[in-house]
Length: 348
Image (cartoon, rainbow, N blue to C red; front, side, top):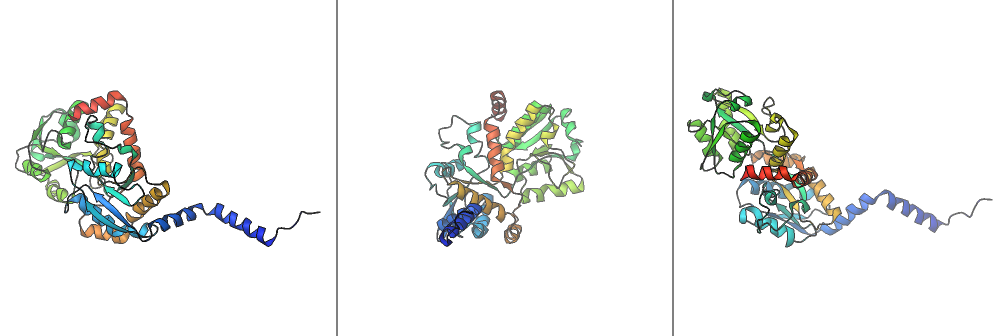
């Protein structure tokens, strides 16, 4: 004989239990929506108003909210100071840890302690931030004046080249020293130029043989790419983890390294390039809100209205997700001690 039939109440309870088990993601989404509904998020950017970082922060604030459950408003707050450290310290230990504060940091924040581990002004562990991602990945270029006769990267091993640079601790000079030590280049940085446009002008005026850039904004490309098209300059190397789509035949510095250790040195140095214009969450934000905000960020990067808005503002969109940035930082900070000390010495 079969067992007793389920009562209507028991059957209902069973169905509810099955539904709850099958829809945990929906339940979490409802919880996140309930939290954010009627609230606003402060987007704290370390940049001053009107600059590139501020531009990306305001683009994000206009379009990301519709992808966050509960659709909170997003308000941009500029917090300038200590080359970005003020905002990073605030996010790490002062800002609300509940998901109502997003940070927009400078690309060098992630490796600040890596290069300057004794700096008491750095009061955060970059690996403990929840990185949302960046709407842009930077790629730098090694540009040479055609009059030098340099045609490919290997030529810099046999010819001394001067390059324009802003300062010893700028990417131009650091990458130049790395290429000298790791690739056998003969590069002499000429420092003191006031910004990337002045560095390019030095190449144009034949004051220097070339320039190694740390990034490639639309304005930067608009300045040097006509020279490449007319044949008065050449791009011989890409300074980033991947080749640039506009120069698919130009190798990256990493590709030119012959040993895994040397490639890893450039991989660590280029972590800042990948981070581009990064956005983060404080370390204490609950995991379900981290997941929701990361998903919202990723969706915004594909949103047609966001992309159109960015195009009007001449802001390049080449996104990287937050998990990738966190993984890059973990790899950098756990690199073998001898590699770390070698890179720090080259960066000084």
